[in-house]
Length: 372
Image (cartoon, rainbow, N blue to C red; front, side, top):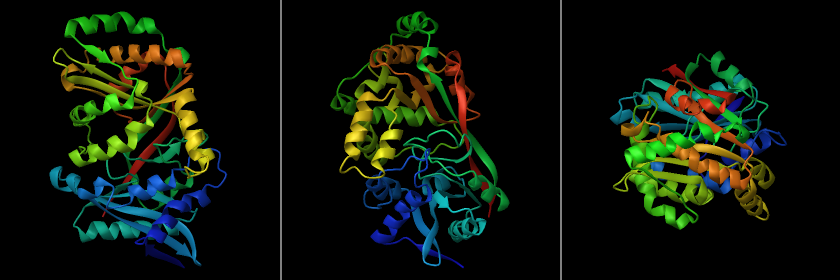
């Protein structure tokens, strides 16, 4: 018999966060989150996502043992401003028993029905900066700190329960040796002169902070046309500023400004923390912080996390300027491999940006949908 319990106390929320550590124990490709970071994400007093969204967290038990978990989420901006009558599910983990998945999703369905919503979609988090998708291909590749990993049976569970694929995301990678500066060096010089553009580089995190709000405004503007996009609010900007920017080498954040010093393009790249997080195993102390700091300084793999270009400057070659700045930086640091984090499979504009580097799709993931 399966019992579903709401994780509505500090102890139960900690159990919710720690369940995957048992499910994927010693798994070579699963990357554990930091337990403290996960708990903060679910803390309604700390995560500003709760100003525009609600979430309920559930644990599934069988014979007093946790066998699954799920978060049922409503993003009210999405429902009210975009008229998307959707209840989301995220942070879903389960043993290989479709009855456990069924019982967990029933709680998500209940939340949707209580609020007169029309369909369920997931897995996804509160916003576009959260993790997304069930892995459907590429199970033999290590995950990352900004993606979920899962067993192959997750996809099978959803399909057995009548869910169908909604959005597909691809993760790509290419060796840095594929980057040939002759493809963009002359072009970027011409683009800078034609549009009076200037790249801005950084060596200190504190120098980036004055630009971050404007960067998020541009993020909202440049991604607004994507079907799945929900804009980031002002209060969320402050949260993401503290949560992410300090994690990133300042040299890996690039801005392009116009003659009026207005940001017209940006890119954020992160060092790969995957192996460091595996060594940390969810904890910053005693040695987790050391492993993360070492990866931040020495990782030879980088993840292209976000890239945004003002719609007015899209298709004008501005990315050549960004690539030129990264090329010089990565060459100095001895970077060997470049990874692109999940991008919508039908986002052909972003794919076109990378075509000269011969990227390879190494993992696919999907969100699944079902009408209520």
